[in-house]
Each structure stands twice: as C-alpha cells, then as structure tokens.
Length: 122
Image (cartoon, rainbow, N blue to C red; front, side):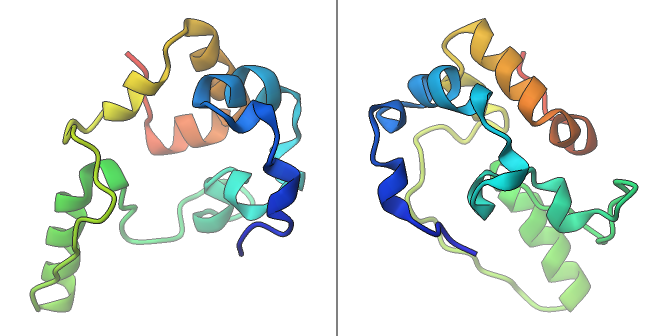
C-alpha cells in the first residue's frame, strides 16, 4: 500500500504543502490515486461510512491511543517518537494551512474524513 510510481510526484507542485493543495490536490480524484491520498474513512468504515473499529487513533493525540491500547491489551504499550514536530498541540496540523483557500479545498476533497473524524481547522 505504498506509492506505485514515486517519480510521478517529483513535480514542482509537491515542493510545499501550499502548492500541493492549491495546485495539485484540488484537481485530483483522490479515490483513484495511490493509497496515501485516499480518504481515510475507506480503511476503517463500511460502505455506509459507519466506523468498524473500537478506537480510532490519531497521530495528533497518540498519548490517548497508547492509553486505550494499554488498557485493552492489559499491558504497557510504548510507541517511540520518530520524526516529531516541535508542537504537541492536538490541532497543530492547522498551522500548515496558511491560506483559507487551502482549508476549503481540503474540506471539500476530504469532506467525509473531516465529518467522520471530527477534524476542525479553527
């Protein structure tokens, strides 16, 4: 489930998140792209978009997920911090959206994910 042909993404539109969203993402049908671009709901929901797992862990709230897993498995779970950003803010991802237009594009392209998983941009 990786990227089928990484060379196809070696284009100027992938030089920054802003360019990626504004110049590339909005013109794509993400359901037809490599798995990394697919809406996340397709991996954890059924056809009626009902969540089929007990817990949905989010990278931005990993501490909570570790606690849930430790409790369910009745053992201590340790997940190392690799490639960690400076911010531990649960909505730190919002800082990447430097223009409101970016928010609107992502809300549109990934509308089901935003709704199902409760993502907010404010």
